[in-house]
Image (tube, rainbow, N blue to C red; front, side, top):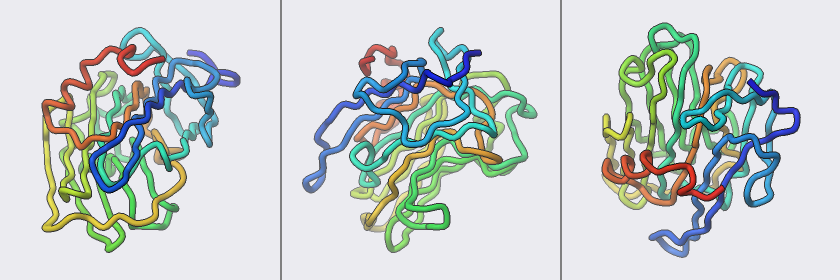
Length: 239
């Protein structure tokens, strides 16, 4: 395990144009490979207590614990209009893959108490693993499954959440398989969003384990698309 007093997290940012009215979105990747700055010369907006352990493919993964806090500037990187967030996780010390605490995988919202214009993926204590999307109305979509069907202690699992405000759709995937989908009767109305994308939670809501290859794309992927992405080598994203 390697302390992160100097190394930070490597992120590849590739500008792409997505479908939608005048949107220029970004593909965002955190490889957690120990580089001091990102491949675009950027550091996380908030980073503390960072340590690295063996990752999924022999690279480094980020050890997430109660002393860890990691957040990146979100505007220009991701969008609530549409996208897919994907991450590899390996829980450590969980009871058969079910923890009795709330564990955030990622969260993007204007502020802690704001319940609109947000996307977040969380294990809600012992009950569900769920992804939530809320717009400015707020219209709320949720897709969920049981945590024991997602996490197993000490084992890598790929989790993905895909959303589209245009289609009014939200999807949750585990190891490339669609496990739940939620739809709205009309397109979502997205308003002002937050400044920071938080990865792995912090304090009592930290994931507890190792995460690797966090990716947010600019497309709302289906099952085939998610499987294609999770099978890509790290070099496919550059850096």
